[in-house]
Length: 87
Image 1 (tube, rainbow, N blue to C red):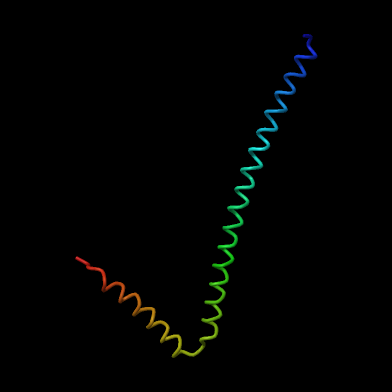
Image 2 (image 1 turned 45 degrees about the vertical axis):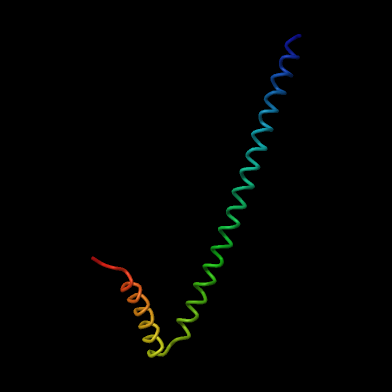
């Protein structure tokens, strides 16, 4: 066994290790991209809900409607507060 054979063995082992590391990195990258896709879908849904809420507030221009909405929100929170026993 001369030096060329040793060099071929060392390079083959190095290549195998690099290929294994590359495969593991690609699997992890695929998992991360899947997670990012799910996060983006949820963020789009939240943005759509915020857009709908802003359209609702923009369309309720009368003071009476805004006051009624405010009183409904206050009564909703005051009902939740009365259910809890504060001591």
